[in-house]
Length: 101
Image (cartoon, rainbow, N blue to C red; front, side):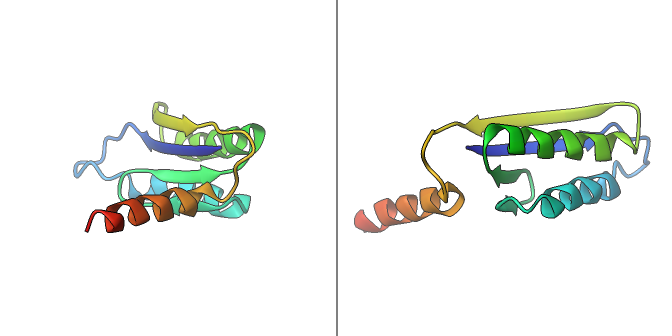
């Protein structure tokens, strides 16, 4: 399964910065050993249900250390029997776009 998620704390920082908390969450993802990709809006991980949910919980816990309120947005693509989809889905998309050129 693929899980794309975004986690951030409520903040009283005058600039609205959540960088330190997000860095702590990404550190949890990297330490998990699961295939992952982080962009400006979401982190996507790939693994089985229990692995992915444990990483999401760990990331939420890391962010919760920065404040009493945490926001979590999560989207999952659950497709039994498929692995390597973190890159394979993009490869198929690029091939489809290229075929239209």
